Length: 289
Ligand code: SF4
Image 1 (cartoon, rainbow, N blue to C red):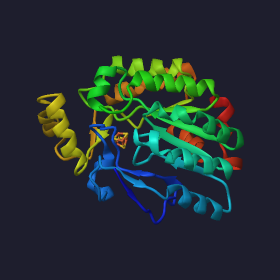
Image 2 (image 1 turned 60 degrees about the horizontal axis):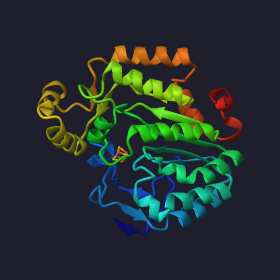
Image 3 (image 1 turned 120 degrees about the vertical axis):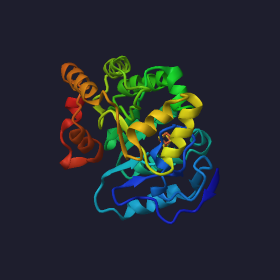
Image 4 (image 1 turned 90 degrees about the vertical axis):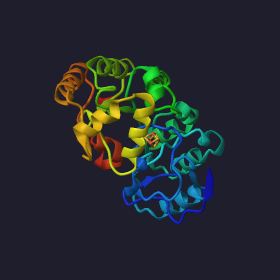
């Protein structure tokens, strides 16, 4: 890793990325794509040393409180965060200024900050999104090699529920011929049910590939799933969207399960819930919990 002094932190949509790059090693990672013009080696994480100061200054200029989003390009709880505590410092600022927070992560390191996340939820709102792709820890080690296994993520979801913090599961990406099975989907949905998450976001069963993340993905397929990259090349060529051949059927199963169990799968409603604070809140908070 290396430190950088950032010029700004908060995006136009109130998102922040303290870390540029990520060490979870997900084989499908879109953030590697050249379109993002990341100027560092992806695993050599650039750490925005002045993140907390920039955030404090940006929030002090805001006329209206809002939700601050973490994790669109890099997980805010990569292992480096254990020592650096920059995500935590930013959460403390958000709490002090009574803003809300919406984070997406694969790491149960987030539970270290349960105290401050609960404090923010009392004053404004906290929403935690957790990505799940496979219910099988050994498959998880192949496709997300350095991220905490799904069993630990499930424990994190339970702990969030016990703390009264709403959690949303992102079921994506689903990789054709790897985790696009009904058995995997049902096991993941059972985790959502037993941990009482308030919503499931799924954009369809498949993944996206573009320059740089495609090459990396195929290299990792050759290492972990010999022969499969050839099949991807034949079926998808250089397409951006790579849908599972079973996508429609799996989506039907997901929608049916969520409806029966009272779990929201309305992506638009869930995004509004994650991104809205105060009067414009959808009022879903109580019904979702
Ligand atoms: S956690 Fe997200 S940013 Fe990090 S490697 Fe995985 S997909 Fe990429």
